[in-house]
Image 1 (cartoon, rainbow, N blue to C red):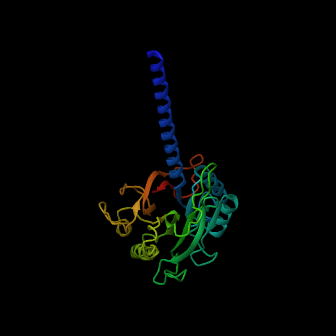
Image 2 (image 1 turned 120 degrees about the horizontal axis):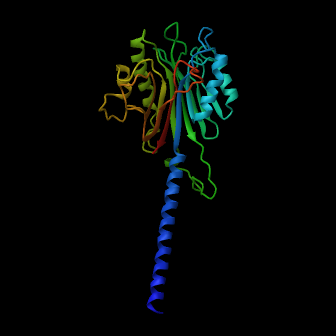
Image 3 (image 1 turned 60 degrees about the vertical axis):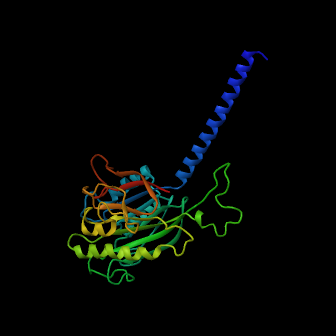
Length: 307
């Protein structure tokens, strides 16, 4: 074999090796992106504005605007505040891709709901509960005689599905494989208004107390991520915010973190989180139709990755 032939062969084999390395790297990158996307979650918090006969535009006008906004963003989880049963039922009827849970502040169908909508094809509901923001949390409707407040919370599990050509996420016998049990908690609330500053502060403390026992015992599993969202009726940086999030330099794993680090923002609607989470996107949604807004609140939308 002459020199030129050897040189051509060398180049050929070198090219093949380079292509194989590149193909392997691209495949690994694609699998990593697939895994990240399978552990991503989008969340929205939205005060619907209750169906008041004196608020303009009326609910009959606003409701389809809200549907259009939700369909545009397609959040995996939605926490709503102020919605009456009529409003929650209307959204549920026209958004069949979601399941809705939660009850009214007085229990059952009465009063405003702290509802949680979740994608039926992505999550499975494992636990559902609620409590009043009062001295008697187990009694819904307790607290102030007018506008009592509450929390709806749920534990969800990702539905694991095999993608075409991939292996099952579970081994043949997966008993004891706690590390693949991907679950998270969602808390949705609406705090007292400015006339009840002590009530808001105590509500923050009560939520922190209620969350603490949810951590798994022993060393079988890591703490599940927890998302806390809602209308907190006050700005970031206030005392109740510090109960939940701490100071700017706080590094306490027992505290929440804010999906928006700007504590000077003029927003009373927040989405907070605990756990190994990376915030990929934060948006204050400015959805309107010819300058007409479907609520007196603008929703917040975030995309997060569970690490």
